[in-house]
Length: 429
Ligand code: AMP
Ligand code: GLY
Image (cartoon, rainbow, N blue to C red; front, side):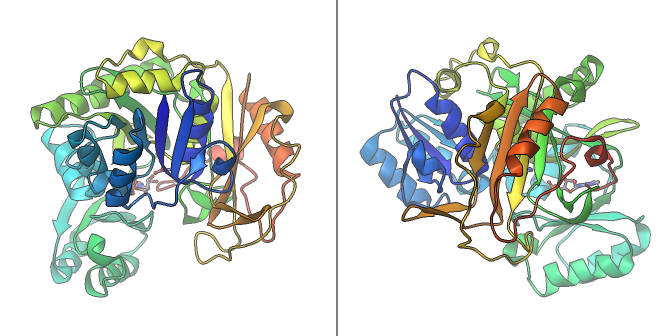
C-alpha cells in the first residue's frame, strides 16, 4: 500500500510512525513533512493548504490512501477533490469540515440538534451591535471569531474592556482577517476539559482513547493559550458512566444530526468537551485529529492503523478492529522561546540520539528541519516527547527523563503535563 499523509506537525509524525509499522504499507509520502518525518517517509515539498498541488501529486502517484492531518486542506475541500477523482482519502467533505471552519455553523448545528453546549448570547456581524450586547452578558465572557484563526480566535474576556478590545481588533481592525468579521459571544463553562475523538465512515464509528490537552503555555495552566503544550491519555479520564452520557447526549445526536442535515461525515471528529457539574457540554468540534492529542492516542494503539483506515476509506469500516494498550501515555511538547508569540527559528537541536528507543520513548517532530545533516528548529512547537507505559506516572517519568537530555537554545516546556498540578483546571484552559 502506498499512503500519502498531508501535514507536517507532530500529529502527522505520529500518523507516519504508526502507518509505517503496518506490514501492508510499502511507501509513505508526507506533504510537506518535517525534519523528523523525513527519516520515516518521503517528504514532498507541497504545503498542506495547497489543494491543487496535492491533487496533481496524487493524480500522478495514485496513493492507495491519503490521510489528512490539519484542518486547512479539509476546509478548502481537499477530500471532495480527491473523492471526485476516485482517490481514497480519510477526511470529511468541505461542508462537513464547516463544523470546525465556522463557529457559527457549528453553534447553530449544536442548538438545532439540542446537543449540550454553552449558552449563546448572540452572533454579530456589526461591531456596534456586538458592543451594545455587552451590557447583557456575564463575565468571564467567551468570544469567538467565526473562521479559522490558527488558535487565536477565542478569547475569555474577564471584563467589558477586554471584550471591547477583542471586538475592536477582530471586527474593526481586521486583525484576524476575514475569519474575525463575525463574532459569537457565549457563556463561559467551568469544569475539566476532555478531548473525545471519534472516527466514522458515516455509518459506523469508533471512539479513540480519551485525552486531555494542556492549552496554556505555563505550568499550573497560566499564561496565554497555545496549540497545546502536552497531552496524556488514561482510561481513568473516562469512567463508564461518563462515556455512556457522552455517547447518548453528544455523539449519537451529533451523528444523527449530521445525517438529518444531509451530511455524510467520513473521517476523524474531535469533540472538545467541558465536563461541567451539569454534565458534558461541547466547547468545539474539530474536523480532524488533535495535536498533541494524537501523539498520546497513537502511542496507545495496538492494531494495524493502515488496515483500519483503508477499510474506512472504502466504506467497509470495522470499529471492532481498534485495540488499545491498557495503561497510559503522555506527550510533552518542547517549544521555542517566545512561543505562542514570536519565536526564533534555525536553532540546532541536540541530544536526540539515544533517546528514541530508551524506555519506550518516541520523539515526534513538529517544527523541525534538517539543514544538511543538522537538525534545527523551524516552528513554535518543536518536538513532542511521547511515551506509553502501564501507568501514567511511569509514562510521565520516562518522558521527562528523555526531555532532560534534549537541548536547543531557548527551549521551553511545561513541567506538569499529566501530573496533579497540570490537572488543576480553571475555566477556559
Ligand atoms: P475553540 O477554538 O472553540 O476550540 O476553543 C479553544 C479553547 O477555548 C477551548 O479548548 C477551551 O479551552 C476554551 N473555550 C472555548 N469555549 C469555551 C466556553 N464556552 N467556556 C470555557 N472555555 C471555552
Ligand atoms: N490540541 C487541540 C487541537 O488540536 O485543536
